[in-house]
Amino acid sequence: MSALVTASPLARRYEAMLVAAFPTQPRLREPESWGLTGGPMNELAWQSRWFAGDFGRDFVTTDGRSVEIIQLGWWNHGAGPDFRDCAVSIDGKVSRGSIELDCEARDWERHGHAENPVYEDVVLHLFIHAPETEWFTRTPSHRQVPQVKIVPPESASPMLPNQPAAKPGRCSGTLAHWSDERITSLLTAAARFRLELKSARWQRIAQAHGWEQAIFQGLAEALGYSRNRLPMTILAQRFPLQQLQKHPREQEAWLFGAAGYLDGFAFDQADAQTRSYLRTLWEVWWKYRAERLPDASRPLPAWQSSGTRPVNHPQRRIAALSAIVSQWSRLRTCLKPAEAFVEKDFRAVLTSLSHPYWDHHYTLTSPPQPQRMALLGGTRITDILANVIYPWLIPEREMLWNSYCLKTAPLDNEKTRRAALRLFGPRTDLAETHTRTIFQQQALLQIYQDFCCCDATDCAACPFPEQLHQWG
Ligand code: SF4
Image (cartoon, rainbow, N blue to C red; front, side, top):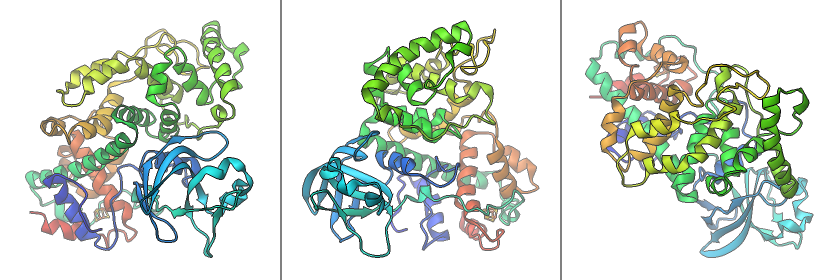
């Protein structure tokens, strides 16, 4: 890793420590690599990351030409190349056409693209894995397509399988003797570093798709926390905010239909209220599906509902996303560039989200509940603020950083408890003092991710304790 990537002196201080700790090995992971908890990344996940701009825009072809992606185009979920209406500059010559992204370069042949005239306009073939021998991508007319082997961002690296168990780490011996002020200076820098990595991600998406879509995607991702991030993100990519806003009467049915919750549902067995609700969704969805097949029916990654609290069922999260679209003009007002951000107003919009059916149902198959259940609870809203809104706003509104640092964390969680145990060991007083606020928890997660998750030596070769000695 050479040039530092963060902007503020605070974040750079932590980043410089990382560079010193891992001089030959880049360690810039995006916080909480999403979409990775269910195993290896599949093609859909790579495409989602590509479309979000996570791979960047500048590349080199396999034969050494420079490539700039001028337009990411639109993501085609049906038959044909993955991304259409793209613009690509190769050695300065701009071509318009499609981009295909495959896991394996040879998938081009395996999937029959070389014989399929729909692929004739492909101007760039991207792949993650290349064969050992030279291999060419050709269209049905035998035109050679430039190839780029894309290198997954560091954030996409799966966690090491041998993550250490939660026991006090070697660094706890040093940190136990630090003053609260010194620990705070370390945690503040780590938290700022983490925030700037998140900021950079939202900025990348905003550059590709506009700031409102970036925030919308961020909200979808946060609603999918933690096990449904990928399907929620892809849903927001497949149905961008602008499209949903243009179709206020259809948008909810599209989201539920594309999520796969309408096809094959046994309406007859549902109660009267559910039948009526589903009928309104289905009447919109089947028409859309009939017009748009096969793209509308391409399945999303599987939803995970086991182990989630009933109020957080993915169906309620989709309902919340739909309600967000309906209230977008209010949210937009809160987030307008160059205007003061009032957190209370933003919270008020999300707290007021309501739906006649989902206010009283956990799922499409559960009986109605007498008490009203909020679509979004306070903890989730805080999570949205910490992971999406403040990272988006702070680079432009530095004054918000101080108020961010004062925000109390609603709860600690298993991950922060584990990180605190590793870093502070038996000093439970330190763990208690330094996990109360959002920035402290974010900092602990970052250090855990940067050091503990990269260590396979039971702390023996981890550079963090030595780096701590350099921290003033
Ligand atoms: S791996 Fe490193 S950072 Fe993690 S507990 Fe051990 S010494 Fe501390």
